[in-house]
Length: 246
Image: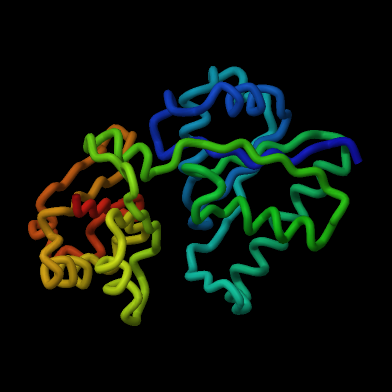
């Protein structure tokens, strides 16, 4: 099989942040298979691509939106059956196109290496068809874009950095906040009240900033997280908190 699956990071939202390599691969691939969070929704990754490529180019391509349910994944544990079925369905659809000798681009938000659907697809399709050729194209991560927006370095000198989902239900989050110099908190939207309380307890509330929908037209930067108290569920899914102690 000569066709290749390209898993491409398209950045957090601003189409100007697509890399030249990402654009070149997207232009070259005849098929774009793109993830979406809900069955009846639209792909955010695809919307970024369509802003960066001329409309005629995207209309000339075959576009396939694939549903990837947004459910919690814990490594070492069997994923939810709905999630597993979605991965296998997507892998099967993409393999069918690759079998025709056509390359497939799979754009994913941010960088594929960081909490990305792309690696779940990669593992699934290789398990089903080990002969498939896959290449990754790195992208600008949300935390890098948040750093640029807030003029806050992620780490300097001998700083220790932790990048974690904020949904831990045990004491690990407190321990990490106490131990590391910079902490990037992902997936914060459902646990804002808990985070605000914890950061306040650790005297870190004034060291934290939240960026919502970074790089998009309705980007929002909040330097005082206390104003979000009682708004759990109202903060957008595309939100990141940077806690920098120094």
